[in-house]
Length: 196
Length: 98
Image (tube, rainbow over all chains, first blue to last red; front, top):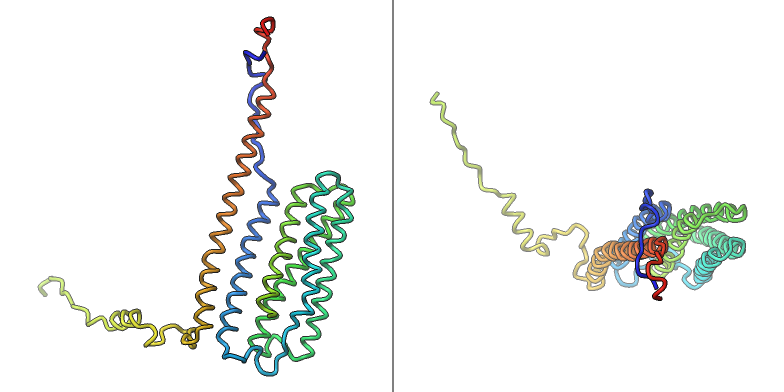
């Protein structure tokens, strides 16, 4: 029967860390990036809805390939799912996460590659940065997303390399995952608003 | 010179009056530089929707962040108390009676 207790040791002098600094910094960064893309998309919606009925896309400009880009969207979403599974596996064993993270990386690279092919096709059809307001918005918004995707792929690749070398920490994985989830989750919104 | 301060009354505040009028009747004076087609319902709807979206999104993100911090703090404190409880040794004061 436990009747009396007494403190065994003095209170710990060190302060407990509330969370990982990298994850917190990434969360703040993602917050600002969400607002950046929200501003871009809002401006685009205003301009498109200001165009007279039937005048979007502007004359001489191609219709954006909504259906074909659905494949890219699916690849990117799959990449997000793959990274999610990698994160769950990482908690059990670092080695078990490696193939899933590699798959996420490969799917991300496939997305960027297909986007690049699509850009070159659209350029061939006359959609350039200066050809119309639609072209300007398209390349600014999709280009900004592509820059983020490339940066996130680089971060993911470095994290994957660290994982293979058994140097990846949970905090770093969380930060990289946050960045990648942002890239993945903002894309369907862009796709639906800009390509439609 | 008398040395007294001369108070000069300002002329009628024409800019202020016209500004007030513009505020009272923005549609009549086309005060909004970007609302050239505000008669269009689609355009008006887009302005309203994006205003709501851009207003609520940061508030939602901040609220989500605060909830996350609160949950994390609760979990951290709970584990800290649990650990300190585990550190306490049992003093067998009444072992015989148990």
